[in-house]
Image (tube, rainbow, N blue to C red; front, side):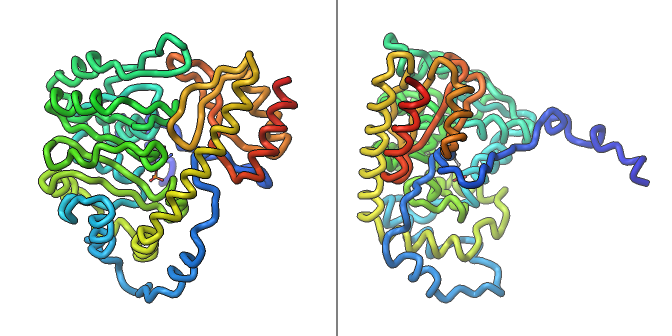
Length: 360
Ligand code: PMP
């Protein structure tokens, strides 16, 4: 029987060429490879969550009403304009499922977050790449606004994804440029603000004026809940309603819904954590910048992209010293580079020392 299965042949062509996502796990290493918030949850939060009455024998509230109401108070967007997901990764795929597919295409700006292209491939959605441009310093990037508008004018393009601040470069794009793309493209513009809490900038306030704008956010970064998989989209009710038609009915579990509701009561504590991580990253950036041979790119997130002369050696030697960072394959405009996120203050001191020994 098994011999007769023609898995490769039966598979959708768009899946055939894909490789499974592999995430590295090296025991005993300080993890600075996934742009997480490594600080402990604000005091009292875990106790509050574990003490909550959650009906584990029942399906979750598919509409996540309590969470949406809390998010509505936090963001100012009415609950009808909010859609929650099992991480923003799920939402990216839901966007491609709903508005992409074989007849649709999405514009992205490499180098950017790899899931946009991965989700497009899984769903058979076309991908149009309009690479970022390097600025004169060679250490910062900007959007090719004209290029994006030109690509977006093609009829098969239904969506544009702008990642702000951008992963993996850390770049914060000017608000005027984003709003120009929203105003002039006429297509669905998704602004991924996964790191927006660190940059302090957001276009959420523009949602009432822009029916084609969607803002995507996550609890995985500043809110330190990567394990619980909770993300959300903000937009006008009509576009959120369209996405809801393709959503899995119980996509966010009850525990994560409750965790999100509770976390939103700790806004001040998280804001302070954000300030700590930004200061810590600045300390690492300053130490790296002292090495003339290392290119450090401008960042407004909790991570930075840097390029030593021999990225592979630096990556391996850091593992040897107990630090896992992220190698970025062959990035357009950049080549091979490394990305690291700010860790705990005590780890960052040791990291700076380790980098000093490796780079000297
Ligand atoms: N968007 C960006 C820009 C990211 O960097 C990430 C995580 N690396 C995500 C979305 C996905 O976040 P999550 O699925 O954990 O919400």
